[in-house]
Length: 192
Image 1 (tube, rainbow, N blue to C red):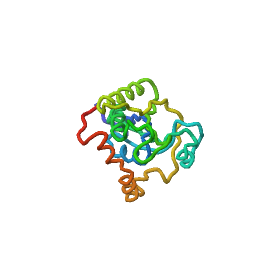
Image 2 (cartoon, helix red, strand yellow):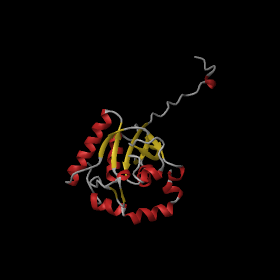
Image 3 (cartoon, rainbow, N blue to C red):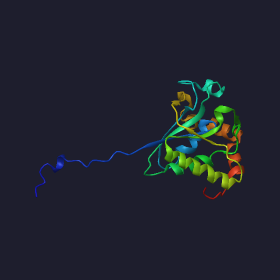
Image 4 (cartoon, rainbow, N blue to C red):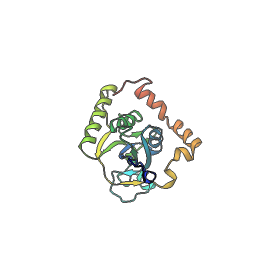
């Protein structure tokens, strides 16, 4: 057997298969921060979805003039993390019983929702929200909505918690996000 030309052959690496998921849980800066450290998450993008205006601005969305939610698009490697794990992680990072918004942010753009693409994602979302309702013993108001166009937020909102770490930390604490999560979920809540 000859190895002529062996030096020219290269092992082909299969490209990573990626998928995306979109979650709305109040101020997108906190949702983005909570997903970024998760194993299997490749990228997060803060943005807007669910409304009627094309290319909305933060000002329009925050004023409730667009019908959009502040949301985060999560790009992930499904060989490392499942959609179910992402949905469970998301629901544990919000108060799914608050229909007015999340934490100190109230209004239609701060409501919580899981935006689904297809029946399998819808099934997972239903399973996740049903599990949260059983665990909490309260009505869960987080919506399941069909995924529509996702509009990335302005550059100053991308990776905000990294670019403005001290300010973000102070804002998160002042908003009571982590304190409220302990009140809702406790410290050692079993899996959904």
